[in-house]
Amino acid sequence: MFKAEMDVENVVHIGGCHCKNVKWKVLAPSSVVAWNCNCSDCYMRANTHFIVPANNFELFGDSAKFLSTYTFGTHTAKHIFCKICGITSFYYPRSNPDGVAITYKCVDPGTLIHVEIKQFDGKNWDSSYNQTGISSCSKVQK
Image (cartoon, rainbow, N blue to C red; front, side):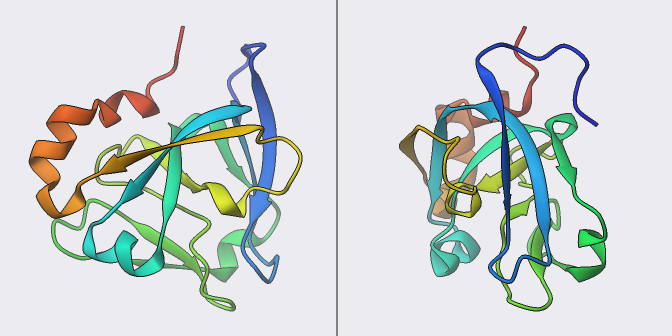
């Protein structure tokens, strides 16, 4: 469920996978910072995502029954994808296990006004994690 107090600069974004069996809503600003990661998984999927606190994300209806999870390495990141179309519209990132990474191209048109792309060097994960401040992305802003 969404937090009770909604920041006025946040809006509800609706999105999901290609076949629409997985649908969700997320509370986030209309202007976001998205991370283009070059780790082996994100690089192959060309995934660029923004991160929100887990409490700001909610799956619709029976979406969960269409999901599968892939992990590797530390098994901290939970790469979630649709069993039907294969699209990863969201996942639980290693950098922010208390948050959700939203693939920004999976947000339905109309609510995401601006996306600033930043680079995350997933091939050199530890140094990039320490230098980028990405861990703050899943914290509730007060």
